[in-house]
Length: 294
Image 1 (cartoon, rainbow, N blue to C red):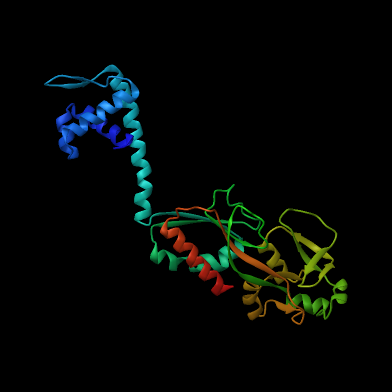
Image 2 (cartoon, helix red, strand yellow):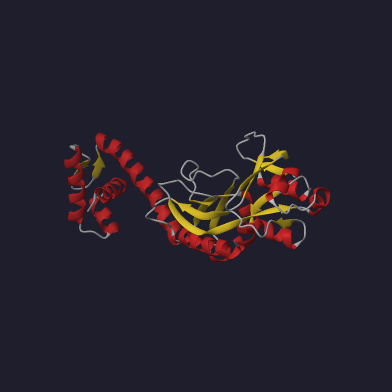
């Protein structure tokens, strides 16, 4: 019998004012109840009850002890609520990921996950900057780009190509560049989440980096894509985000004969030993969904 069980027995004896009734309610021999109280009195060196043949009453110290014990027992019941939630597959998942992945890939398909776990809440922290899993108390993070967090578990998804694009309006005005040398006569849309000012933008390819003038600097992916669609300059975005615009003819892919740069897509997790089943299933579902859509 551990200390928590002895405290529960003590609280019940105090409420019933009877060793016998407490033993009856718990389905224990009266001797077990007596031993539990004696063990507490010995451990804490305090007399908890006045005992007579007719009545059991708390001592003054016993009343103070009861106030602390009942608080501990109540807190334990609250902690046990977590086990109940896990068994009933009820809880919440907080995930950090780039805004475009959240809106284009995750949210349109979440209903399939809710069909399996209708009581689970998903909290999305959509940010163009890197979400910090530990500082922001997130359960997992989807990251596009290199990972240097040595204390996190990395679940690789796949690499995504970065396409170079321009709108038909832009190409009609400035022409279709055929090689890197011609880019000197063109403009890019510059993008930087850290509000960092620089004189030239940079286009990245697998084996080349090309500096190019720009006329507009933006700080989020939505503005970046809208600027490309508006014909303000060349943009580079992941293949999964570019495909729909290319298929609709809103953007034209450039330099298709030159190997594109690639970025890894990973799911980052903390090394938690006890994960609720709904969370582990969410990670497996998200892994499969990302691989299919990327």
